[in-house]
Length: 55
Image (cartoon, rainbow, N blue to C red; front, top):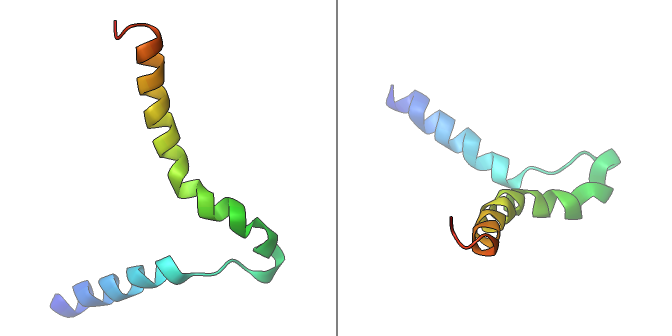
């Protein structure tokens, strides 16, 4: 059980250092920004509520 867990942790840690295939290398800047996009929606909800006076 512990070996399976450590194997999963080691394999999932390698995802953070994955590279795009060479054919998609020009998309690297977009892919770098993509994890931040949900935060923009979260902030947009506050801006929207401030615009309608937090009804």
